[in-house]
Length: 168
Ligand SMILES: [Ca+2]
Image 1 (spheres, rainbow, N blue to C red):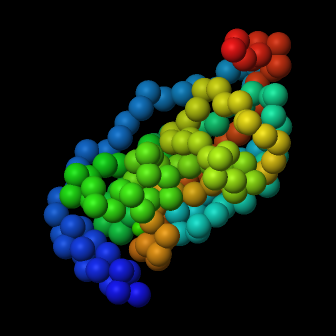
Image 2: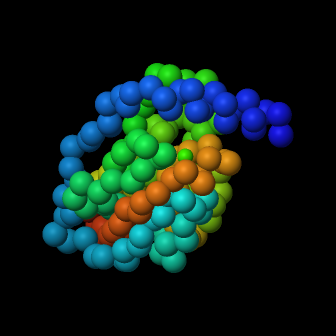
């Protein structure tokens, strides 16, 4: 409880500063031969968003958040690629996926830690390491989802097998 109080106090001080640049990546376009598996809305307020989309190991997928969708981490407006803020470096260790940016869109097959991956605004090709249901979340610290708002819409496409066999 004391730890949470300290984190809250520090976070309040840190958030009083100004926002740092948003992460922006080149837009991904859907290949014409891709087949839409499903679309889903990812709520930044939820620890887990069940997309109801099943990914199969050995298959290839293209995941896209179309347009310039935004969601909010308290007062910070961010795209699904997330944002960085030097003043928050103390808390990066507690992010659910420490190596990914704040508020980056993260996926996981069956909520497994070893099957997590960063989706961001999109992945041109993704090969799941296991078969299972796709769950997603905004990368934040557990206990700090209460100040999140907004959703982004994710589309998942399956790519034809012939053109997407891994080379390794
Ligand atoms: Ca938050």
